[in-house]
Image (cartoon, rainbow, N blue to C red; front, side):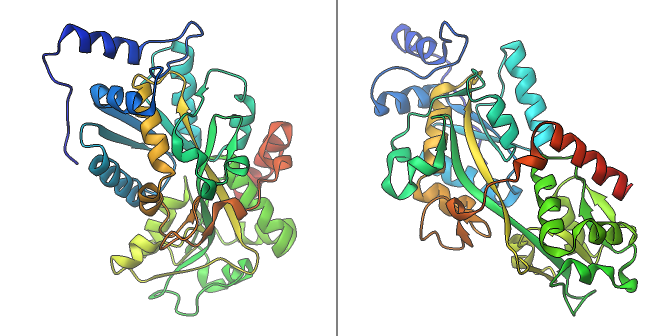
Length: 344
């Protein structure tokens, strides 16, 4: 992607506007200019840059970058991808120091959102697309700060060259020939993954099936993205927690995916960071992400926050909420410890 910069020379009036746009409120929260949405866009163009921290798939983030920069050529979008644990650690550190680097984040950790509903960690959303009736604001936005961007569906993935018979249930991972050739995701990476393991226990055979999978000496990956890459490369034959792997499939990799009889998903929520150094561009990006072009970029192979998005597998609003008994508080710590003992 091309890189853009703010003009080296500006008039005193524009400099004053920029200072107003990037200034902090008395509460220490970075805020956009007051005025119309056109004023916010103008200030965002002067800022010239916006950074997103996201757990979404790299190909979809690349598509978002291209679509956003085409719509707003004066603003350079920088993408930082990572898992919830790493990104939230960065966000918390920036919030404590008051020195922000990121502007927008997309996460799945509902417990972190609950803990920050009434803090300055996230700014209030002001973009007009959040009021689009098709977006269903009442069920898609939490506390006026966290917006539903989409959802990932995870299931069973396999390499069709190595495992032509495929996978339809967790019990299929127990075949003796697959010992040492399957992959799972580290349950400590994110509460989202704790929710997935809870789902497997609930619908597919209880703790016993997880213990049996552990006896298969699975390789443990930090997230579903490197797990999918391992399936595509043939490093492993199958993975318990894979997304649909459409980019790999489109690139010619011998991969296939199944949701299983009981579908599981994790909702992606976006937020404008309270310490955003580009608060106007942050609002413009957040607004773009729930527009039709934004959803077209991020929803292929996932669930969309708008209806009728080509390539989307479902509506994100229809994905069940997390099981907070295993994703928040003492319950999360206890369940994480139990799973780490099971798999280690």
